[in-house]
Length: 212
Image (cartoon, rainbow, N blue to C red; front, side, top):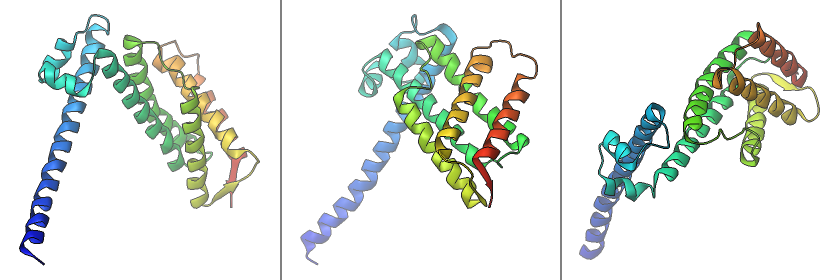
């Protein structure tokens, strides 16, 4: 190896970590801005919140904020995307439940409820709540349903009907809609409504899969 080649490799190896550190710092600052905006939007509403309010809460300068976002609307969209991602991650945990077991289903529903509440509250303070039946969400829920059935299959279950993915996707949408309507929008729950939902979903899941 020549001296020049060795020197070039040494420079490259030192630049890469610095670039990585800068990227981590940049992402951390962006996340801090998003978290700060969530807090301020929740406290005083979207309309009267200013860029300065967000910058002060995030402890960054206006110029730093504008290197990450073009304006308040772009921050709001980033918040919505972040909450939507967290909701879908929580939905995907359905694959770790035991088919037909009301207790594990109830635990999954409770965890999903936390994300639905947060998403509903903040989106209502920013702009109308994005519905779960948008094209992107429908496609993503279909992939989640497929993954859930695959996880159940790996755990000793097998598909029992045709169109199993679509059946499960619709059940997931039913759960999301119920959580949006009652815990999310704080409409009073009818007596035993949650228990009935869990009972319906548990029985329907056992129509979709069966023990191998």
